[in-house]
Image (cartoon, rainbow, N blue to C red; front, side, top):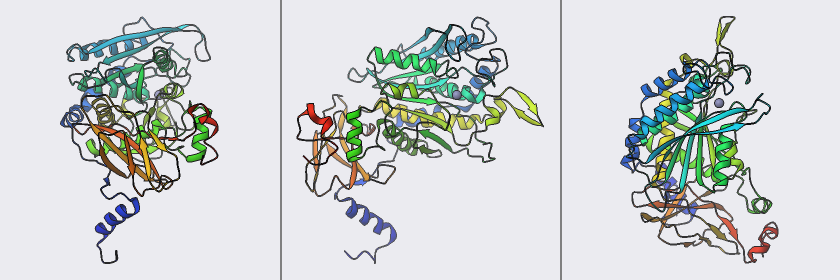
Length: 473
Ligand SMILES: [Zn+2]
């Protein structure tokens, strides 16, 4: 075809079809479809977020080692206030939300000078679809705080941004989402001991592992309140989502496969980050999700890490430009500069927008079918690409979509609906030239995250780990 006479738009369309092969593919869907999700996003209120952050800062300090029984000051007061707030929220859920204080005694450790009770406040909104209720999505913020020293339990540590902002986002999401019925279960959580080395989140993740819970995704919101960086840049419209590429718990066999056919950019956590970007573009178009392809910032960590280490897909939300004068600092004025993590440096409207990005993704996850399981790509010499997967069992399943992109693209660029099948062959499309994935969708158009396939060779399963590095059987 002579493309030189075509206008730019048409030319692009033609190129996308010809270079991507399949004739009835389309660009990845970005239009909002579920009115429930749009309503959730609308109801998130910056005034509530401000109220929560100011109240948490007013407890003086929320250091994990601070007073646990003082009703006014210290982490105990914050814990009890959060518990009462979640209980109020639960009243609007028609009995589907339960709230608990998940406590354990942490023995002496590097940042724990004496045995200390650590308490997570955990609100669970049970899913209503029997086939999906065991599928769990966790969203968390940490309600503990610190000043210069993580073991100083007496100094003022308002922690308005780190991390009353994340805690407020979670509590506000719980308030807005509790009246809605989702297929899958959502856990809204405020954890303690983050500044003491991720203790509260580690306890939750370990309990989940022991009980064999199906935690299908975890979001931590940590430092999501400041829109003016120490570099002087004001950005009220972007949030970073950190995701690791190579899974923290990757096995040797999985590493061999990855070295052979790629996939270092296609962990379940990275699919989750792409999913968040897509749902944000659909439901919160005023916000830009800046995907950062690394687990966390230099020299820093967060509550997603204990989940990653146990094989649960997880990402971290953080503002784009941090101001280190307002994190982990004693409250003071030095050379005319105000230090300390004070509410005056938090942009409440920005926190509300971050909460909206979270809520759009969480609600879509909890409405949508689970991401397809057992997805494989048949590894034989062929001009076609054959994908196989296991059937979903949700009653509202509409079917599946195959997505693909060029191997250098950071996001999925094309999708094709293939119906209610468990195998599909893309004719004339080489698996060597693209990355492929499969996702499920329901009758309302809610899409799951993408599952990246593993190669299926003709070698018997017992020997698979040793045959993937050398190419063709
Ligand atoms: Zn933090």
